[in-house]
Length: 60
Image 1 (tube, rainbow, N blue to C red):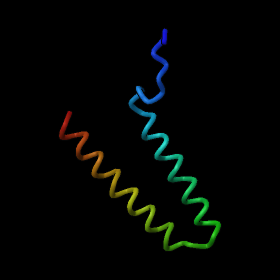
Image 2: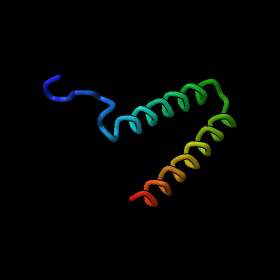
Image 3: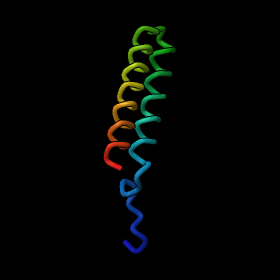
Image 4: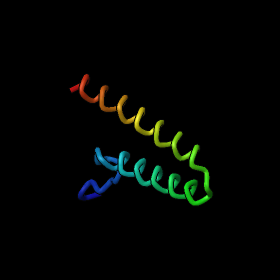
């Protein structure tokens, strides 16, 4: 490849994919009237984001 156009070589792409997947799941389960599951997904997401943030600060 001439320009190194590998999409996973970009640092933000995995995070963007995770956000999109999370939003799709939240919207799907919200429309299915499963608010408790939506709350659980959101809490797990924020907990995971906090852990990633802490590890990013520690490494840097």
